[in-house]
Amino acid sequence: MYNEFMNLKEILEDKNCSIVASNGYISFDPGIRPVIDRLNEDLYYFKDLSVADKIIGKASAMLLSLSGVKEAYAAVLSKAGQEIFEKYGVTYQYGKLVDYIINRNGDGMCPMEMTVKDIDDLKEAYEALNRKITLH
Image 1 (cartoon, helix red, strand yellow):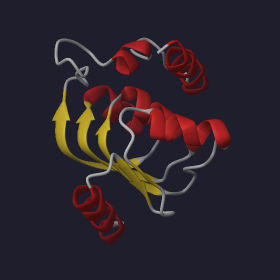
Image 2 (image 1 turned 90 degrees about the horizontal axis):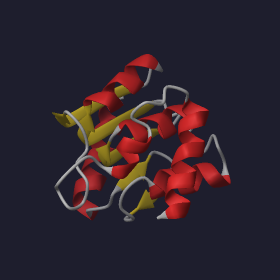
Image 3 (image 1 turned 135 degrees about the vertical axis):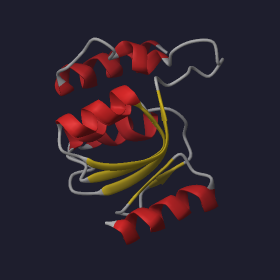
Image 4 (image 1 turned 90 degrees about the vertical axis):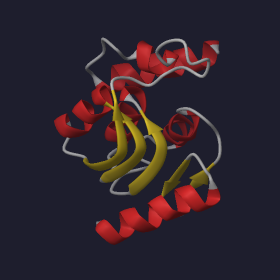
């Protein structure tokens, strides 16, 4: 685990990408789109994979958990995201733990984190996030 995490973390930093997975997947797209787009193609795309992501909030943690991710590194992880990983047995590491993910304007909670704030069911979260992205 340690070596794989370190390699993914290095790739994340060196390439300045938003997410990298142990199957070679890399994306530079911001937010949850790199995760949810893969799940829309194959719900279990991240099954048994390791991922490194710049920012993981509750929304991304729920999507990754639903997909069956094995382990995750987040440069920034929200406390709600941490709770999801612990609840679903996902091994995780982080650079910085924050109360919540801040929106791009820096003046409130990320709209994706807000969307799943009161949702506990992974499939319900997936559906709510897809609706939210479609409206954006």
